[in-house]
Length: 300
Ligand code: PPE
Image (tube, rainbow, N blue to C red; front, side):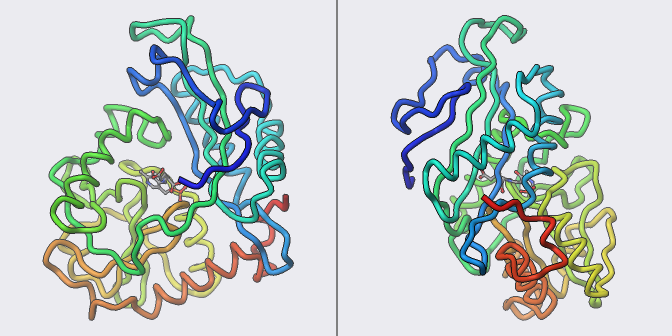
């Protein structure tokens, strides 16, 4: 990965190579960490801006609450450290990874007594899925059941589920996986929400079995502002396979058109007009080209 100079760890900026943890860190054994993924972009003015910083920090605190973490910083302080980490490393565009985890000091499932470590790293990160359009494989593992964990939280342990699905898809020659929920309906990708276009309307799985993506929310707003109807509902795999268009959304994946689900080609196998329109508007928004979305940007 592309290194930068400094990582913020528990209050101090330290050199990238020195940002290490003990092998008996609680979260390494039990997945007891929470994290965010945020992107920052160079805007048209030449200045760098973080996309939807407040919403990401809000979700980080929500996730932390599910594991009873007591964060000794206010949200605004974390926002400022994120901006500072970008400034100190002098990067124009990239990815931000805040992570809060139970660290050293305690083994056994009760994390009370373990350190609570808080780190913020940034690095340049290009295309997430590596392709302009992706081939997707329905996974044999289902998305974690909403009564197994707080699925709206971004908990590190949840990602063992995502990793298995992703590995299976890649091993079968696909770019990405699709996880179904416990009823067999479409949930999401391992690290992305999913949308389809049918008869010029946008359809996406409702809340309940998904991480409520901030990119998903941005697409809702952009669609509504452009008179494209958005429907949140249970989405069957059959509806997905017969969609006119389909795409993934996520901070890392941004808007990625889907070419194929299993053996079914979506539409004519090319990115459709509504996908292209939304992707273009999203890209304009993150680069500060659309005034009505300027509230989404926090300038560094
Ligand atoms: N679902 C899952 C399971 C998920 O991890 C993400 C983000 C999303 C949906 C989209 O959420 P949002 O980023 O708020 O639009 N996945 C992050 C982690 C990717 C990684 O590989 O690490 C991300 O995109 O940053």
